[in-house]
Amino acid sequence: MNDIHRDREFCHNILLEFTESESLRKHAYAVEACVVEYARKFGEDEKYWGNVALLHDFDYEKYPSAEEHPYKGSEILKERGFSEEFRKTILSHADYTNVPRESSLAKVLFACDELAGFITAVTLVRPSKSIDEVEVKSVKKKMKDKAFARSVSREDIQKGAEEMGVDLNEHIQFCIDAMKKRKDLLGL
Image 1: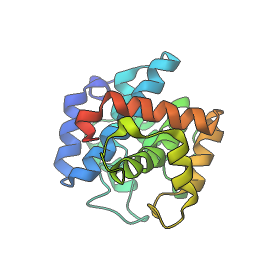
Image 2: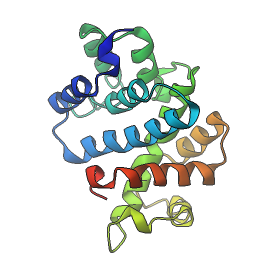
Image 3: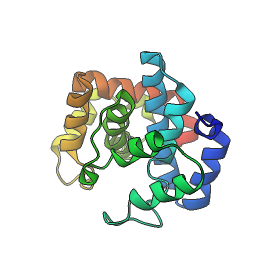
Image 4: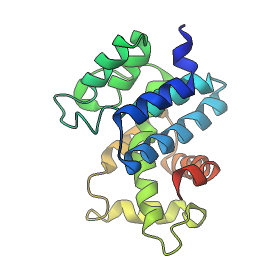
């Protein structure tokens, strides 16, 4: 396997090159935090898993349509020497690509993507804006409020936990804990 897959600095520079939005960068870091913790839990390659998560939406700012994202990103990564496996995992995080999530990493990436964004939104409406005050019950309560963070798919959050074979409450807690470890980077 090519070393670029495990080189966070190289991957981070790609993220910075294509993503100017601070909130999109922080989303990448939040998903990375969750995915890396799952890699640890499952005894997988933390650097590889983390870089897949870091780059899963790197093309979104420039190519936000379903016709282009994440396809354009996959083409760019191919040109830069990333493997088909790495790119296929990123493609699988969007249901509409119809790329099956066969690996544990693909399932974890999908399960953490929307949830990390939702946990961030829940944190930012708290008076303290601190993830230290976010609990599973507050996340679940906000999930029922369809007007709150309406662009986040509750269905994908539930489907992600199901595909991983984990209890939704445990998955939410796991991701909150993972994001707490990186709260300074995430601004939470």
